[in-house]
Figure 1 (tube, rainbow, N blue to C red):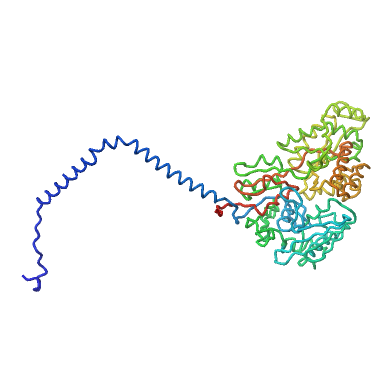
Figure 2: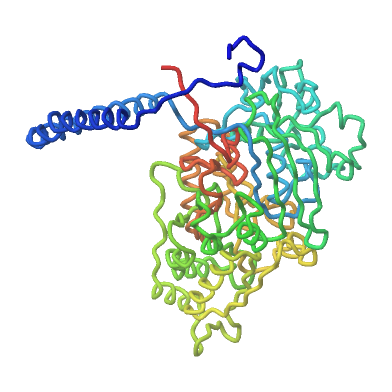
Length: 599
């Protein structure tokens, strides 16, 4: 049938399939394959085995070249790739309170001082080398009388609300400090005249020459445009105390009451992107306020905080060093056994000298741990140079003999003069380190035959009222206490007779009085020549050691704890006070990132 006819497409042509022909062709292909394999593989296999060593060497050389190239490329990239602090993250620091105000004019506790340094700026601050340097100030000059200081302010400093910070704010702040109705914790500004000449210039006129005055410019500056109309009598209770506006590296955001019973609080701060020295790396800073060092240690163990301060030397033994780095740094303060020179037992210089000889200060430091700096002068290490007097020598037998010569003889294990027992009431504040030192000193003094009674007061307990009941009335024979010396060796406030009781504001806790000591302290504070001041302080130091109004035990240290792999207090930083840990705050970080540098 024709294909064009209807239905023709249904028929298929017949297809023939010859299986014998296909099988013959497949065998032919198979035979050719076998012949090729025999010719080009099996017959040459021996040749390959003969050159396999050369092949292996060639392969190894190629691999070596590839590996070297990859390593060279990695080194090349590494040379232009560095790890740097990331500009983000939150840092939480634990401090000891209480925190009753965020107004730095009333800062008293470690928590309040820390918050004040984070939120507010100062004319001068201490840098990472421990030297006084400019902050808000850009220049400072003093006239020929050495009594008028002119300070120039930077023009790019702003308050956190965007208003410019000017010299009027500086003058306004000093006015508040000088106003007795304000009751500021910052003192020493009486009779100093302050004037704002223009927006960037302020002058300070002193009633007399005072060599250490530049160090007094480390005070927080407050905003006049916010507080200018506030009654000074009500400043402490004003809302500014809980919602401050500063000009520092961090802005206040929120004060959180975490636990009303324990008074635990958290101060939340955010980065000041307009800070005149540049924005900090950290995006947020949280200041966790705790009642005592025990709570701070708990916060570290539960990871509530990244770091912590206000820990004693002995507290460091409880820190998990697999999670945290610990740093111990000297600060410009010292711990002393201060003798009340007006008490019956210690009014005799010979008795004080005997106790000085019978006190093994090295053993006291060893009781605290390793690397505790010695301190035997009324100055911190490094503040005096030249012919510095030597440390008193520990001599127990000489101490006993001197007490005998002074009329205090042993009656059994107790020393008496007639019917009077040689006894001392030793007082210190609650602190793990101080308590351990108190125990060590008491044991040493009892070996001399002295009857020792000890009292420990808690400065955080309102009922104890340490200042009102202990310090001002000098209610002790011996006071184990820390004296803050600062960046300048001016120790007038601690040892000049004018600062002894009955002056309630005086800090001469020894009631020490010596004409030569008074003269050298007065003269040294009124001379600006460095060499002359040093010579006068050397004279005072020798007299102080002779009169023995106190025994220097050790230089205070700051114990700082922070999580591993984060950047905080520098290992080479020199600290004048605990808050100077923030001297490199702009570079603190909790995260890192890798960046490429330009070849």
